[in-house]
Amino acid sequence: MTAEKLDLLVFGDTAVDYFYEVDRLPKVHEASDVRSGRRFYGGMGANTAVVAKSLGLKVGLVSVIGTDADDYRAYLEHLGIKLYLKGIFGETTKSMFFKTNGNEISFFQKGVTEKLDELDLEREFGLGMFKNTSAIYLGRTYLKLQRQAVKHSGDRLKVYNPGYGVFGFEKIPRDFELLVKSVNILILNKHEAEHLESLGYKPTKARGPATVIITNGSSGCSIYTKTSEVDVGVYKSKVVDASGAGDAFNAGLITALLKGHEIYDAVRIGNATASFVVEEWGCQTNLPSWDKVLERHSQII
Image (tube, rainbow, N blue to C red):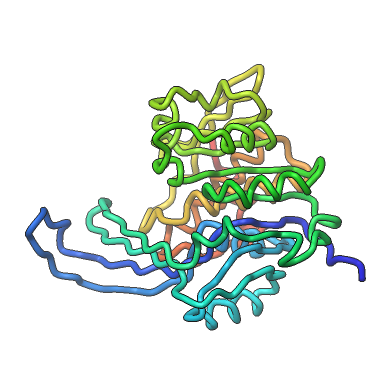
C-alpha cells in the first residue's frame, strides 16, 4: 500500500494545557486567588501540527498519548491530521500556566510524554511515513526519537526546535550535537540560546544547520546563515496570551518554505502566523488561514 503523501511530519508531544488568571503571583508560603481557569489542547508537537494544518498543509503527527485523552485524539482526527499515536496507559502530559499582568509561572507534569524516547519508529509504525513526506519537524529534546527520524528522512527539509528542553542540560549531550548537525534549520528563543552558550555551545556557530533562527518575542527574531545575519520584525498585535507563539511561528515558517518562499520571507510569514495565536488564550485557538497570514505578512516592516 502506498503511504499517504504528507507535506509535514511532526515528531513531538501532545499535552493538555490549563491556564489560570490569578490576582498576583504569590511568593513562597503565600496564596493568591484564581480569577478564571480554562482547559485547552496543547503540546509543542501537536500545536505545530494543528497550526500547519490550518495553513493548508497535509500533516502527520508522531506522538504518544495517555488513556485520559480520547477527546484529544478524536479532535486531531477530526482536523484531518494523520496520526501515528501510541496510546499508553497513564496520564497525558499536563502544562499549568498561572498568569497575571504579562507575567507567569509554569508547571509541567510529564505524564506519558517521556515515553516518546522509547518509541521504535520502524516497529511501531513502519517507515512508510517517510517515503512521501516533504519535511519533518522535531520538537523538544526527545533525542533518541529525533535521531531515528533524521536517520530515515534522507534529504527532506528538517527543522528542529528543542524548546525549553535545553534547560535540562547540565552539559551538551552528544546526541544533541549530532542531531543539530543533521538538520537544515535550528530554532531557539533568546533564553534557550543563552543557556546553551553558558554551557559552552554557541548555536550560531554550530556545525551543521545552514540556518539558525533566534526568536526574541515582541522584538522579532534574527536569522543566522553561514554568510549573514538579518533581523526580522513582527506584526504588532494585541497579545492576550503568548503561549504557543513559537509553535505557530514554526508552522508558518515551514509552510512558507514548502510553498517556495526564501528564508527571510518565510521567517516574516512565521511571525505573521504567531501574531494570530497570541490574540486569544490557548495554543490552538484563533487559527489563521494562509490568506490571512499573507495579509499580515505584507504589513511587517
